[in-house]
Each structure stands twice: as structure tokens, then as C-alpha cells.
Length: 367
View 1 (cartoon, helix red, strand yellow):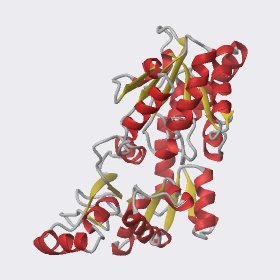
View 2 (cartoon, one colour; view 1 turned 45 degrees about the vertical axis):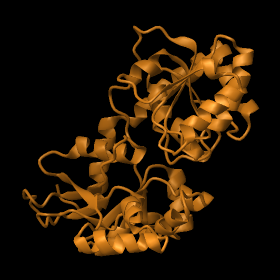
View 3 (cartoon, helix red, strand yellow; view 1 turned 135 degrees about the vertical axis):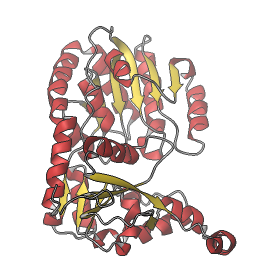
């Protein structure tokens, strides 16, 4: 099938976010990778915004305690297609868009990054839970499900009772800019965390661990990079750091211009989440020559190839022991960083692009 101006090979249904979350980042980089010659075209999700919804449905839903406006924003069930494009394949770029699947007239695939809310029964509110579960029920209607790790694939197959043949794994790629800058001096006492402050990121336990680390290693210091993305979390972390008397050893940065340079100067990069769907920061830190200390959970072990120091995310002492070992044990640090550099090369951005094209061809798309 020939791809016309309004009929791309793949229609990627996306949601533009004010912050570069993992899901939005994946979709954005996929567009960068293969949005050439109209092979892939993005379509923005949408919510009902006509007079009837604005003046009647949304206000009434708030009175009834349902808040449909927020529900449609977080779990949209429509998308904008002003030119009535008809791609060979629709690809929904998040499990939260599953409500759109029943409205597609052509085959649709969906990317599932994680099933964290369902597995751990963690939601922003009862309303958010109801909206998630409505979308969750629709995931099985996809012709095919794409995941970003074997761990997530196993969860999807188990929870949704999907056949293994209908669920695929394509690991994300890390951009070529993530390389070690050997001109920069590495500070072995610099501890870095890159990410949000969502509850599953486990920063409370990490801060408790840092209090132990700072007592053992007076030169150590910590930088947290990334916006909060969770209401009230920043102020709670600042209060916790003050309670632990470590506030002078911690720096919060919402954004940095050159993340590869930060990793290239860091001694240790930490990610002690209780749950992840993949783990971009682990590979990016490895690619820049930093030692990684990670949670001993299936997804992060899969992402790291076990070329990291593994810790129990629920035990601050275990986290502290891992960080201290990474700082003080030079032989271990050298071995893991050398292995990590080799491992990270397997997640090449161009390779990811080619794998995604092959995935689309496997779904019947003709480029």
C-alpha cells in the first residue's frame, strides 16, 4: 500500500506532555527515529470539548463525584484525526490509551510500559482507579501488545491471559549522545539519581540510606535530577532530609542541559525503585561509565544484565551497603563499569529503530 500524505504506514497515537516522562520520551524518540517519508505520523489524543460536555457533562460529573474531565485527560478515549487519515496500522503509544481501541476501524497495537497501578493497587484517587480499570479492560482488544521488557511481557500474559505469540518485546534504545566523556574528571563520591519522585521510585528509603552513607563516607554527596511529578513529594523529601540532618549534602535539580556529562562525572548512579517497566537511567549511566546501584527486582536486573550492584529496595542498610561498596571497592567498581559499558552498547538507538520497523512489518505494514 502506497503511503500518501494523509495515509502514513503507521499512525502513532500519542499524548504531548509538559514533562519528558518515560512514556512520552519513548513516543517522541520513536517519531524521531522513523518519522521519515511519512512512514510514521503522530496523532494527538483528545477529550470531548464541545459545548455539551463543557457546560453539562463535566460540571455534572463533578457534582456526582466522578470528574470525567480529569478521567478523559488521564485515560483518553479519542484522538484527533482532522484529515481522516487511514494508516495501515494504528499504534497506541501507551496502555492508558486503551479506551481508544474499540473506536479503531483498522488493526491496532498498543504499547504496555507497565501494569504498576493494577499490580500494586496504587492510584492517585478512587476516581483515578475507576478510570484506569475501564481502560485496562480494553487492552486485550488490541491485535498485538508491545512491551519494553520480558518482565512486563510476563505480567501482561499472566494478568491479561494473553497468548505469548500476541505479545512482543522490543527493548528501547538509548541515544548516541550517551557516551563517556573522558575529558571530565570523575568524582567517586558523587551519587546521582535521575528520575521523578513518584512513590514507586522509593526516595524515602534512598534518603534513609544516604544518611547512613554520609556517616560512613564524609566526602559523599547526592544530586537528584528531575522534576517531582507527584504532588507534595518535593517538600516531603526536603523535610525528611532535614530530619535526617543531611540537607546540606543533597542538591535538587529539576533539569540539566547535559545529562551525559553528569553521568560521566558521577561515581555512582542509583535507581532503587520498587517497580519499573524498563529503566532508562541504568543504561544511560552505564554508557557514560558510571557504576550503577539498582534494586534487586526482575526488570532492573534484566535491563542491567546484572552488571550492577544489587540491593534490597526496602532495606536502607542494604542500599547504603551497595552505595558504599561502589564508592570504596575500586576493583568491583572498575569491573562493573567495564562490563556495563559493553552491555549498554547492545541498546543502540539505530538498532532499536530497525527492530521497530521489523516489528511493524510483522504486523503487516508495508513500507
